[in-house]
Length: 491
Ligand code: NAP
Image 1 (tube, helix red, strand yellow):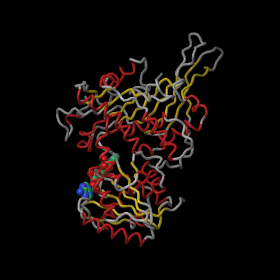
Image 2: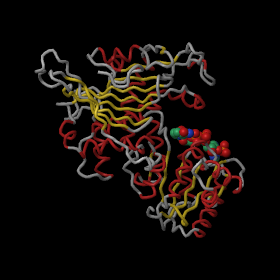
Image 3: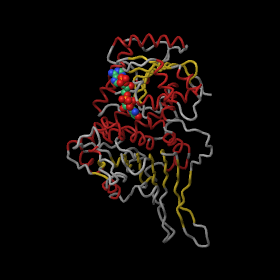
């Protein structure tokens, strides 16, 4: 059983998709594991005029699966209260304060408040302001603000958003969610890098040839079309998730495994990103859109809510450099897109060849460390070994470095881990403002070049791994993608 936490959650956007699909099930897991027990309550707020009973029913349904006991779900749902509330209406915050005070006493919470803004970022500033001005923040406990992506749509808007929140909440009480940072295998990067001298010593430009990061989705734009059309793959996936992964892969070893030391190194890595000139963007970045598929799937421009002349990219591939002492010169190839051949998140670290192949005509494969984040956590190391037999021959062997033997160990969902981190006040796995700012600076240079320079927007076939241009990007450097639609791990 975990250490019990006392907290009042106020979830703005309590009727929304994120709340139902991710937040309530994650809170329920924390409840079942004993981190939340008697001393917690949740207020869900949104404009819809729901009653507490109706809300509790929604919560019960959201957490019910084959393994849920009805008693657990009922008991859990009783901690949930609903307050109909328009975030632009000051009067409503007065009602909210009263309800919060009542629940704080009823559940002996001691003033700890967690404000989860699960709604459009355009409301963040006004909510933060009202939480302060209407005294919904307490002075006898902590007050923590959890916010969702997107954090701005460029550096200037991100700065505005940050200022509007920063006037009321200090940086150390703002938790910017990037749910990739809550994923088990993303957290494993630090364990592999810094827990093994083997990798710690080799993790630099002397031994690493190139790094490949792939975040591919098989689905098309689906129900988030309206938002996606204004964002595109670069803003939606590269600015946050991919650059966060880049920072974890290239940061220097922190002095200790603590929030401040880790964040310092991540910020330093992102600060060292090479920001491209328009000519460099054209050379190092590819964007594309999915077309109609032969199987009858719609192309991006035929999707609902999408303009028929849309220039929004659904695919990005690029070559990124982190100009730090240990990583300058190592190409980091990144790629993300929709309607690709397979849903996967994976990282391939390709090591340099041995200085000399002494085995004559025997071909040596590359040493590749592969970290598969999704669909299933896996870590492989590709090595050359001798073929068994009288003669001397070589073969490539993949070592499985992550034998999950105990099937009973359930992997916690990213949101569950991140909410627990917020309850404990640990911001290690959240994005610091400076990380956001350096990431936008890098992304803005690409976006501006694309917007100003008529750089082509090719189509790619649904079910492929993107346009030919993404393969050419690596071929020019005499490299290739390790993961292809035909082959999981070719070399
Ligand atoms: P959503 O389903 O559209 O929910 C938006 C919520 O805001 C609803 O509960 C809505 O309820 C409420 N709302 C809208 N205007 C309001 C107002 N003036 N006053 C009070 N409440 C208002 O959106 P979502 O998908 O849950 O996403 C929420 C946030 O999470 C967004 O920032 C999104 O980018 C981010 N996000 C979502 C996902 C996901 O998987 N869904 C993933 C990553 C990030 P009423 O209509 O009842 O007011």
